[in-house]
Length: 260
Image (cartoon, rainbow, N blue to C red; front, top):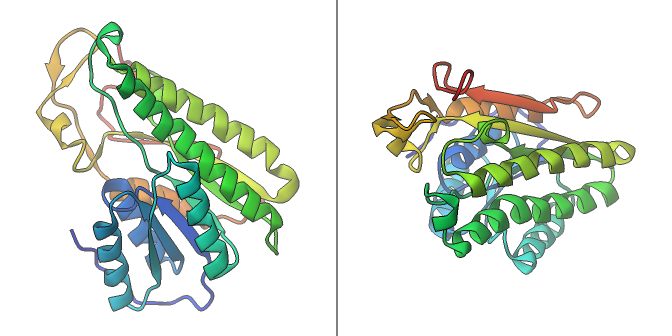
């Protein structure tokens, strides 16, 4: 999917990092930040979609740097941030977007490797990127920056058979609040966007039916992923003395309020 880039209108660029930038919410957010004048570092496991977006950006006078990265691998994350510091000298915004789900099965039937994959990606991956971002934002001049974490409505209420994903997103909430507190002395702020039913390649199946709390299977309303991207863009544009700590962006009629 291609994106239509708006005319350039910014003189001074800030540096942003988007993980999971190759598709879905990450790709839409990276494109939006590019439109807002950011130089965007594109991180993800698959090199080809990252490079494609970087080339699209260059064709429209934008700058994006594709850096294939596995957020679950400390060495890979360190290499990513070494590249950012070596290339740009600073980082102003990071959107920790990379995440995975697990099979919707009773918890006693869940293969342990699926649990570890969800926790390693959704929690440890976010932690590793936030930790490296915090370090760079703390030592750069001027000091400070913004860390935005992709949460979920599962951080508030689970779906049936989603123990790994739900636990991981609760953990992200705790991490976001801890970062927001610990960053005060360094002008580092942290936010979390809890997403409900953004339509992506991975979530398209939900339009055909999702297991509900009462045991039925029903299709659910979805929203374009660009609305999540626009929420990230809004938070990214705020001065560092203002923060949106948590935000829920959801399809209005999805079964969340009143779920169960």
